[in-house]
Amino acid sequence: MVVITTAMVKELREATAAGILDCRTALEISEGDFTKAVDYLREKGLAKAAKRMSREAKDGLVTAYIHAGGRIGVLVEVNCETDFVARTDEFKTLVNNIAMQIAAMSPHYVSREDIPESVLAHEREVFRAQALEEGKPEQVVDRIVEGRIEKYYKEVCLLEQTFIRDEERTVDDILKDAITRTGENMIVRRFVRFELGESLEA
Image 1 (cartoon, rainbow, N blue to C red):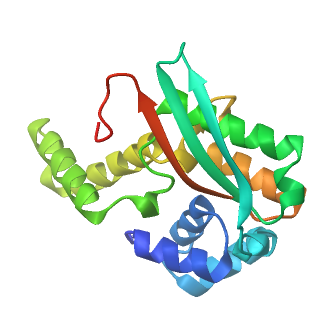
Image 2 (image 1 turned 90 degrees about the horizontal axis):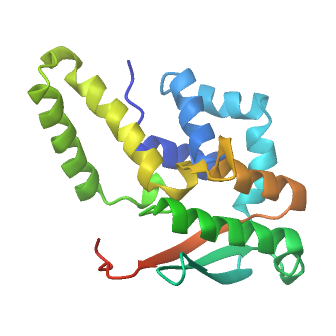
């Protein structure tokens, strides 16, 4: 079984501008073959639709959201290509929903590509130690670790979290829908979440 690395996903995404999860799926189905993965994305129409995602997004909104009687606050920047789209109710609603997602689910990163290698290495060590402590056979430990890393991504990466308003979809799905409807690239640029009494490092 070919291990799909973050670097492989990043390379495919840069080449096709398709979504992170779509790129990973394409690589898994093609068993790591880059050319076959590109063909898969083209066949599914994902690479073509995602051409919009290669365009630069420099406009957009910074939105503040305060929750739980002032105990949780979020600042998030979401970019689009034009001021026209940035001023639409649909875009404002999207940004507000993303801010609410951050308040409710407390992600640490926008995407898995933003996670430092040192953090991933530490998590793998912890998951490996857990698996061995649970008495799992050595030959399956690596597979268990990677499975738990995938679950970790879904917990700490905003784009991979289940969307709070639709449990059948991820935040990345919601963002791609908005891109398709408006015809403009959109990017969650950055965010910060404050919780009363909590340090920024927490």
